[in-house]
Image (tube, rainbow over all chains, first blue to last red; front, side):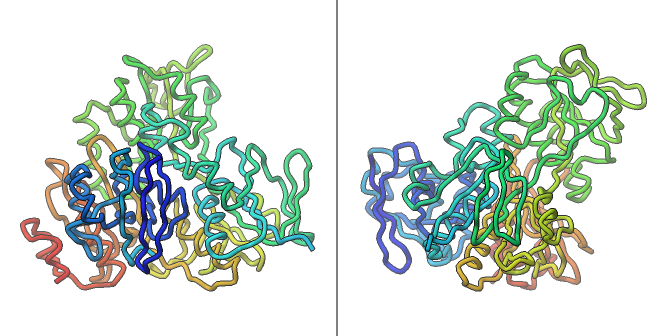
Length: 106
Length: 407
């Protein structure tokens, strides 16, 4: 099963197994990782699952939809590697993915 | 001495979050969640959307898989109903008589559909949409060329209409008021959604007074007081919900349109908290008492309630927000617009499918309805929660980027 590494704003590292087809957001929620709130349950409505994708993985992840891009421009502290984790589906190719969690979601 | 036990009544959004938050906040005792449905806590919003369409299955709806709860020692008792709380002896009783002791109790009992009791409402095919079982029943009656009548033009009714229309049914919405979304929003939004549903082929009738449902062994028509009849293979009634407060009331807790809780989600009993749709609480933004039917409120209150049970004093002060997906339209609402004195439109509600409405009271923004306008929603949320001043002329000008208003 692919492993995703979630790094909290304070540096705490959580390596968790996330089944293929599951979103990066759901992987965090399932494993009770603080820092991904996911109020809307994954319907791209709330932007409370904002993460920063590790640079090494940016080009392996499909591009964001217009709706997601619009939301990302308005999150607190947006960066070029910002994504909504509910919109990223884990695949075998993403085994080892590293995401950082913003301080604002704690 | 046995370890302390916290019982959560209601395997709901709020119940699931509360149990998990208890562990995260350091509760070391037993956690038992009792739910009357046979399922682990699940996401309800997809019920009227991707679950109805068959795209999602029960397992996809679960908020967390079973193994994750087991990992942190959260126990479930499902398909069981609590019938009595004895606050004096700190026990509760299940419908078959079993008694449980609790040290702390959390009420996350949610709400249930408001029912329509008129002739024929017990016919097969007259249904509601609140839980997994409801949708599984609805599925028996859907198919291309079938006729569906939705009773009630609220958000649930509209979302269901949109999905049934997409599935090929001929859909009619019957609304008792003079416009759809009458109770919850302004005429501009009602007019917009009426236009969109009409464009998609859904018929909307307002000021309709329903007298009953007709049919032999299953519903065949909806009958109105003025003699009008609407043929139907399926009727879905969506006329609101009522909070599940009977247990709390019988136990002597204060109930006034919901279980009364303070800013810490505590009831008048220092060992009993409540969270979610079933509570009535004071909202610091609007300085009024509210009962909210939303995922946001369920989750945020649950976290506060869990902290309270762990003797950590956190206050609930989240800005309410809501969303609704219909066809290709995402509506995001921040704040509560009731009591507004002025509204500012950004974009054209009369044409297209993208605009927003900002609501003001005493020159302060109190709410925003954003249609396919996520930036307006996100920025609006910030303006409202921080109480920022905005230039209304610039706000109304959609050629000015909404983000520039914050600078």
